[in-house]
Image (cartoon, rainbow, N blue to C red; front, side, top):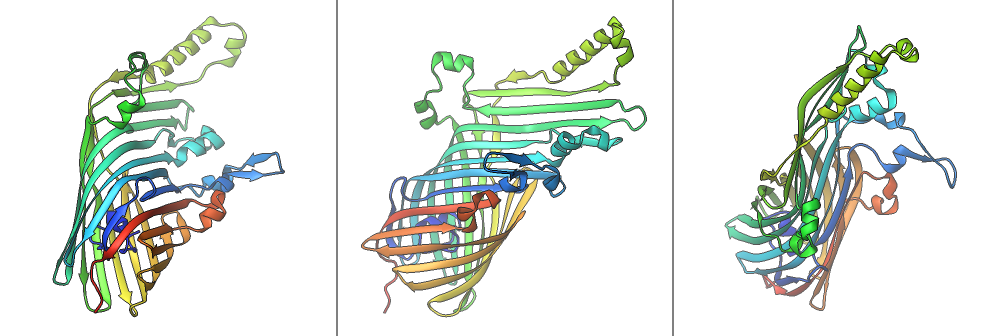
Length: 423
């Protein structure tokens, strides 16, 4: 979407983009709709193998070694409720109202290693099988979009007012298991801190506080954000741009339910099976005490403390070279930060501008854990309407079960006039 400046929606991804359409209005729901899926660890078909028409087999060992120490599953969707943009010769102004759902979950390689090989394969080692991270949110975004031409520069900014609807966030999460090399005693340590907002407990349901209007019109969880971008026209053919997206936060205050456990630890030294078979009551008492210790270690205490979550920040840079008025080539680098991990994506592209009525883009993207992504976009404008469809991975629409990554944007705009008229 950063590569399609003829759309006013592209300004939501690259704040310095300027549309050539004089007046552009996004149709509710039909315009600015997108969704994405990403799994850095494995595809469905790499985990499940079909034996025949009715039987599937699982071969975890075929992909466990390929996992990183920490892996990610992410998915989300955006639906534009209303948007519009007006372009002048040196500046543009616009606004948008969008509902966004974003869920990102990190999981450890040690969990699969422990589940498949057991602790016997890791004597004298520590396995962190509970090193999870989850931040899932639904929020509404009210944004202003503006750009300004200053010589060869174009500066853009999109300040945002955010209202959170629902969130679940793991502030701390670890469950570490260590097997002693000499005595094989198992020591487990854990600490959990889970924060939620907008999820009903029994009291909320009894009083009917969490009906749908309560979600849709909730304004208590307020946040702020901003996108910043700039571009520079080096000469008639070369243009460079860069910026930062989603710099901001949401403060969660309504319907808070937090759960904490630990930090606590227990050590299990085993039991004497022979004594148990002979009916030694002390062994049963000892086993019961261990079970009580496990229950106590995983016992959660509840709180209603407000908390803050950050938006998934993205840094990007784009460079383009105009071969002529119709043909452009370029490259893009994007870095997204989430839960102490960085996701990299590098894209090379070719753009064809036949006229103001039709343009298209072909892309190849190299992304973290997903090295082969062929994508593209089509933008068509006829009779006051502007249609667009873009994706970074066409292959995912054909073989979704073999794909780790898919991202689709589509919509329809009302389009009137041109910002600059050709002489």
